[in-house]
Length: 401
Image 1 (spheres, rainbow, N blue to C red):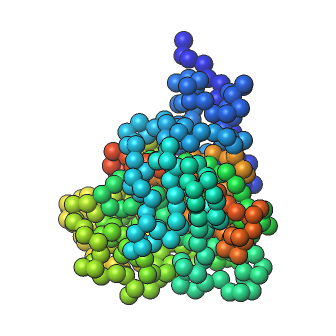
Image 2: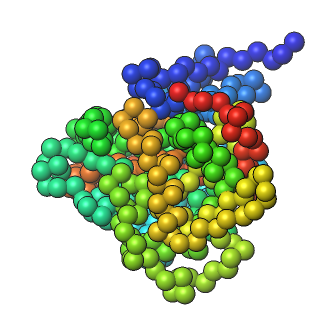
């Protein structure tokens, strides 16, 4: 007989999910208030995988006090081939040439695969005498920042949609795990969308959209193009765009000209530059593919005509961004975005190869106030398995609603 399972999951409510195709909450087995991987059966682990790869973001509530060393082992349930190295490298990014250094993220000494992110100063935390983490201000990211009136009225935006990977030398992990330690006591904020719709989000909410949902919104011609296209990312991508500002929706860089010339980047070689399919395979459902592209870091597109074998290359960066944006921007509507409203103790696992995510929230003005500091753990480990192309034809895909 098959092994029984007592771990279950429930989809988030229709009011929260809307058309995002995202979100489920895990119910741990009775008598297991804190996640204990040693007590999970194989069926429990299969249920976890099913919950994630069907819903892309899952949450386990009330996990305050979980040991950080659990998170890397939890990640390997979803990617047994994950390395034991954080996808950003063995140490937190500190090189000022890399825009990611601005977050001042730390690492937990006893669990170096786990980063520390948030907003505020902390002392003697997890073996670190001094820790200052930064929730960056929107002005660093957007070509046209929020107005003072918008700030005064509690508006925020997605900063820059991305997946967790350096796009150089190391492969993206299958999953990222976030754990909330402290949540700021700050009123909810609002996101405004092009059609005038507004979405209320928690201050500092992590926003997500599904690559499967993006694919379902493409025209048949766009789907055919995407299925046969490979994306080359910029060399040392986060150095290349460190002086660039994103569009209002965080999906692209609208103006060309601030990029760091490739000859001025840190040493690099083409064999280490990231090159991935435009459409990635769903681990549990190959006919439900993900359009998975970081629109700000794209550099070149190579498309193969499946009928003739002829290859077409677009290597004008402005044009590459335009092509990607035309397809990906179809997702940017309130009903397609899931914004996780953090509670202290949440463990959120998201499918890093199936969703794009973004920081939101205007928190800078609160950073010195004791009850408005923010602290999260982040575990994302580089995989040893390259992302798989979907390997399907457009006719066999499943439409995601």
